[in-house]
Image 1 (spheres, rainbow, N blue to C red):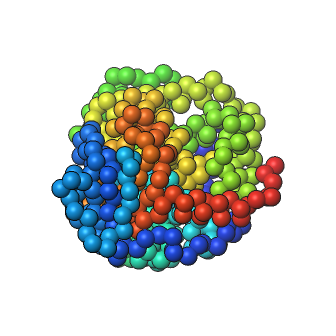
Image 2 (tube, rainbow, N blue to C red):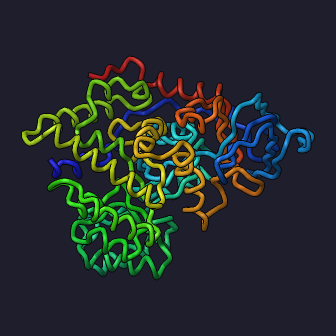
Image 3 (cartoon, rainbow, N blue to C red):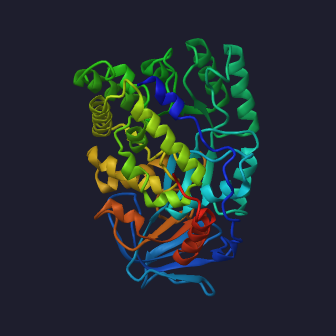
Length: 452
């Protein structure tokens, strides 16, 4: 069963049918417009607190003022966004996301980027780069399309893309020169290739993360400076959970090593439930957000899942044991002070961009994370991770204006992050009616295309 997982993770993004044409940006307020949220209850996310009845002023894509309504003036001519007791918090992040390659239909690329924003995701760390994708990042930064702030890994380092230590070294230096934000590690690298990559990354100031190649191992990857361990990759292998029961003593040791090294964990727990076959196909195929995914892509997801369940060695009880072990590993890492970053690996099997986040946060709470801790993994932790790039992740003057307006307090119930009234990305505001209009356009593009 284990051997099928790597195949299942191959991206299914090329040659998809086109979505509806991207709507012009007329429904989004420009960052050049001074905007003021008035009468909002702010979750600054610098600590677990709510600041009641605040005015937050945004200008030039930055928060320029924040304070009580009674003492914080609204600039003349500013666009007022009335709070009416609603809650304002930092935008969330997808820290293991994907963006279709440039050869995919432009409408599909723009729909994927919009779906992230529609769900309150204002930052995406793209974890599989393609040549030409940096041009898309530049367009997003200029506000030519509705998109999150993008930080992109280059084309990945794997057993297929790297054949020698020398090539690994050269590939790092090329991606650094091209302007990629980080390096993506995939399985298949030899120890020598991985070390050459890591040394060149250190010399060029490139960060790297992703998977742990089998020949490298978790401990060595930590020693060589790998920053993020996505999908909790390497921990299951190191702890031997595929072969038997989880060793709590060994887990405690790995937690300590991870905390001291300052690594980050991107769990993507919900996707792994799909890959391990514990998520029921009947429930997956009726997810309401599938109407925002190309039907051909959904058909592929269903077919792959059916094949997985039909494999002769598929054992549902064993898969459930492995998922429980993953949840326990996440719980121990969190309890032990290892930093967690929110991520779902969308768009991936039954993980529709943005919508998949709302399923993921429920698993994070099952691992013992409080609503505030879950929210931190997608806000202040992300700002800390990207501290060398920009200043965001909390609500305060000087921060990048990535904001989500909610009808209900997510500190009471983290599921309230789904009660979105509007989203702001670097000062560009989309109200609920504009989000709904664009969502409807995406869904209508697929209407009538039956999913078998």
